Image (tube, one colour):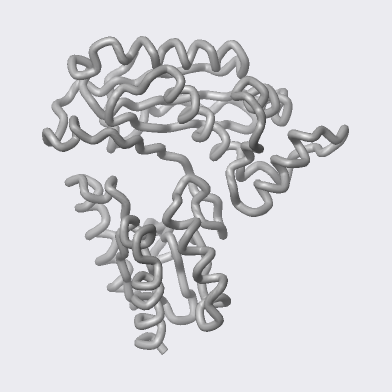
Length: 274
């Protein structure tokens, strides 16, 4: 069991040969075992999603057909009506000769978790029996930033975005993408989760990008309120602005609760850039 900064660099281990699937997620509070299984399953699915183009579709299987259809739409390849064991078994079939590594970060020091770590360890061992991965459990030992962190019941799953599509784990990005697609004036403008080459050493991935208008739209959830993330966002905004971009930040809560308002903000910025 290793200690590590959950907002810093993860332990630098050499990647095994072949496709390397890394799952990272943080729990603000230790979940029940069933919650841990579901969250690890969703995080694993997000890691497998970018590899869907390499899936061997023969022989055809109902799960595989349904999962490929979801993946093609940028959604998590988790067809309904299947138990977690089936999903994990199918993921293992998709990459039979490649290693998995699951990394889990807990955003609370161990003394606040009481017996919750046991549920997470049981979940990891259960998944390990199916996937045969190397499973690493990272528990940070530093103090939590504020009491609000301890009281927060929400989970934060860290998984890489899928280039060109709204993030499969972000309800706000998924909803905004549907509204933009239905808006005649905005539908053909934006790219999702695109890299912006600012310099040889700076290539940020942004939520929404209008390349021609040099407009960046970022959807900020609660993770962006933390001190480290907030500072990193301000530095990235500076680099983008210095390169001629306009940045619009909208909260995830606003996107989910008042989507027309969020769309109007984007439309206003588009008109200004034109």
